[in-house]
Image (cartoon, rainbow, N blue to C red; front, side, top):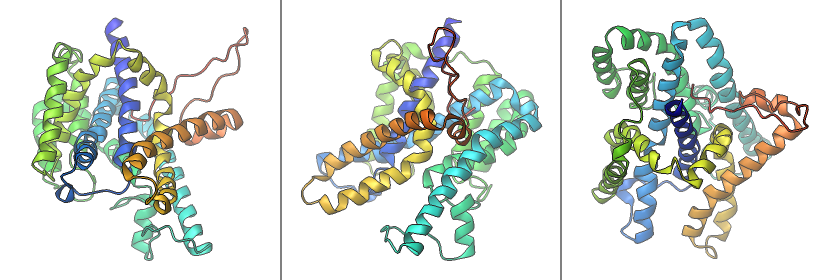
Length: 356
């Protein structure tokens, strides 16, 4: 029970921490690693945006694989399809099409320039912007959900390999996806391997706390790898992304017994909403900031924008749960708050990020 509680708490901590990392990762403007300057701030920004938080999606994907295959949902394809339609497809469509409609109204209806090439002008572009068929959807962070949907389609196959030929299956997954033999099936090469490895940990019942004694060396190695990416201007971070989950997970043990770790775990329920809704809020902060750029130094914006974006969305979550709990819960695929119990104390239903 103590082991299960620790795993559950660590997943909750990492969900919110990784999602905040995604928000910081997407804080504009993006600077390719080859164009990063040599100033102190440039190097710090690059450390987080070009290296450290490039591992956020692999960590979340690995957790997704672990939770799915631990539940053995892959053995029930019909139930898997229904659940993932509600928990992944519905939020993907709602938040992506909502942004697409808003952008089209602003640009083509009200003639407001967003300063971005957001609204496509051809049918193929519209199909990708709306549904992410072969390219990024308009709500670009939802690439993650788009690829998760694809992984759900192959989850029964992965499950069979995990139980009958786990290591041969791992080799096949690495061969196909790391060499892009899948074409545009997945937009991120590393998602399938780390999803499979998460499943391997579940099916083989690995002790997920076995490396906790090496938490500090794992953290040091992770920081060193990220620093090397910046120092040597490494553009292809696939190997860092592959290693990330297996260094960050044990390193997170350092937070387990801290007040900060407890706070991260409590904030986990906001993670999914912050993830699906942060792109337009970040865009709004950038639009507001640009006219003020001469008066407000960019490092101030870079530090405040992800914090402000996350705070705004946490408040929005709370308000939505009060004003329209059932409708809001439906689009973010979580349980609405229960009615007060007999003692008048609200009985809040636990909320999980939509990984599992």
